[in-house]
Image (cartoon, rainbow, N blue to C red):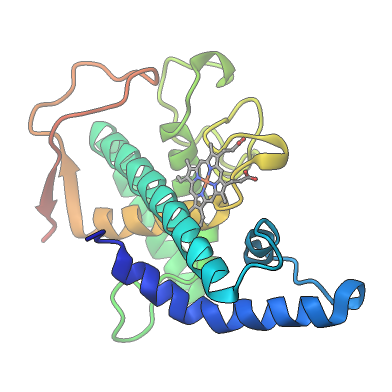
Length: 228
Ligand code: HEM
């Protein structure tokens, strides 16, 4: 049995009534129907309009599984890249932790009883972390700007080059019309994940890598040593 099938069932249960409602309204109201501008509607429109709603729902739920898998895989993989960079450049971690303390004090974002409850505004204000992320996720030395050989974690601070900002100098999320629409969410997730981990633990490589290059993906074990 496909292990994803129980998740497909959940998606069907949640989206089914909405899909059915939309298909009915579209049929009844024709051109005057106020078509929702969202991804669910794009998915509905790709399927034959006379298909039975349960089949449409199942096809969409399967599509969503693929999307969810892709978005989780990319986000975890890129979080891992940042964790390697935090291990390889541990000398910058204290400055990142200081930034968290300052931002959280300003934002009062930590909810009582919720460990590391970062608000999205707090995460946005972590500009050094954002720059660290972008530097860790660079793909191409030639496009990186001055001094590409050296890891410069604060390269993008106050440069209007957030980690979500795509362009020829930053192609992680593609660019143009089809640039990743999930990147704002993904960067927010990655910033939150790595913030929590670095606050809890020192991240070190048991066998330090001799050199680090943008061209090679880092590999090998990482150790998480609980902070006192
Ligand atoms: C670090 C995490 C992620 C990376 C590196 C990434 C990267 C990409 C890339 C390179 C593309 C192709 C862009 C192009 O064709 O030019 C893309 C497309 C897309 N991504 Fe992401 N992605 C990430 C996370 C996510 C998340 C979390 C979601 C959804 C919540 C998402 C949804 C999509 C969708 C729907 C497309 C297709 C856009 C289109 O074709 O118009 N991605 N992504």
